[in-house]
Length: 148
Length: 114
Image 1 (tube, each protein chain N blue to C red):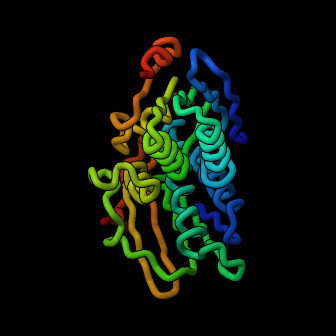
Image 2: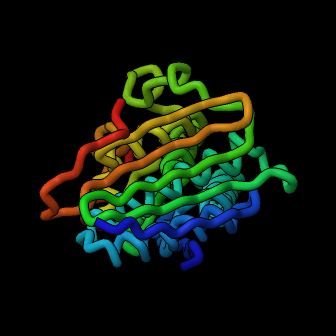
Image 3: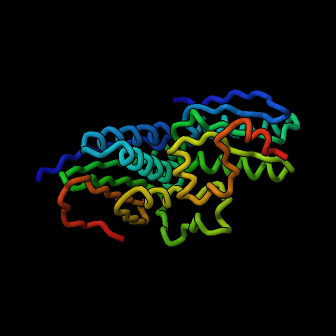
């Protein structure tokens, strides 16, 4: 199966968040996902882009957000990389815990995990890479390389 | 679509008709400013009509939570009206659906304020 890849390098701005969401929506439609799944994918990408722009790159104009979409007939694999300090997923509080329910932030990663089939967060000293996988409906399934 | 709000008064309740997207940036700021503006005028009974809100992200959810707690901390009440399926589903999975007082009938919602 041939991989189709689309890549973007974007500035650390709010416009990037919207661009990432729109690109995800368009590519998900082209990959054959249903309307609800397209919304889930585009929202997951939006949340990951928000994390990259705000928490990763902190709006630094010298830092970029790299966005990569790969479709292979079985999966849509999306990778978002920032150039920040690195997000430690073990330090993300559970937004469903009673003491966190009324917090005004901290739900982005939770929503991403809720909407995607596989999520892999790879922090490093040069930034965070988050890999999102959504299985294409009706595909027989390919070997998966990203898992929690 | 940009977030827009329009406020009307019904039986002492401020009904804020919201439309568009409540997302990081302008959408969240407009909602915040609207609620704070009402509180600043002493209007502490607020019904957010989200019937025309077609998209909300985690920042928008956070802004709804902020509005809810801000109003409550000032002795007021904030309720939600006419959730779209997308917003309803998001509040369900984030366990916020039972935190907010959610209504689907405006008349009943207005009467539900103390």
